[in-house]
Image (cartoon, rainbow, N blue to C red; front, top):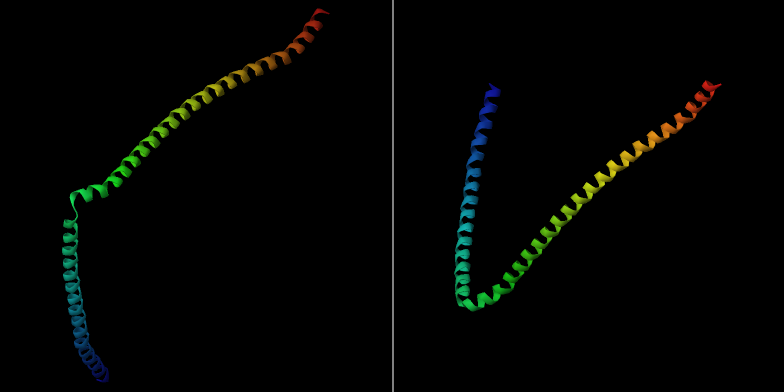
Amino acid sequence: MSDFQNYSDNASARRRQILPTLLVLALVALGGGLYLASQQIRGDSTARQLAVTTSALSQEDLKQALAPLQQSIKDLQAASQRAADQTSDFQRQLSAEQGEQKLLAEQVGALSARVDRVTNAEAAAPSQAAKRKRAHR
């Protein structure tokens, strides 16, 4: 029976802690809501001030302010195109050099095979000459 009593006492204690916890959570939620509402009101007034300031600028002022930016964009686009063209040129040049390298490698291989045949023929020639001398005796 003492276990049952301890369990019921723990349950009562938990129920008593739930109410203050819920109250604290409700207060935090209410405070957060009020804070967000005040921020939204400030944001709206800031947006209105920005709209008034922007409308005070004339179209000519905006054009003058944007002109250097537009020129910078054009310059960047031109530089980007030049870089792309140079990359294409380098790729074509590399491809041509790789073709030449392959051709040279094939030619070296053919010359090496010829040198091997000549070397083998010269090595075989003295032994054949000795055989002929023996055969003539």
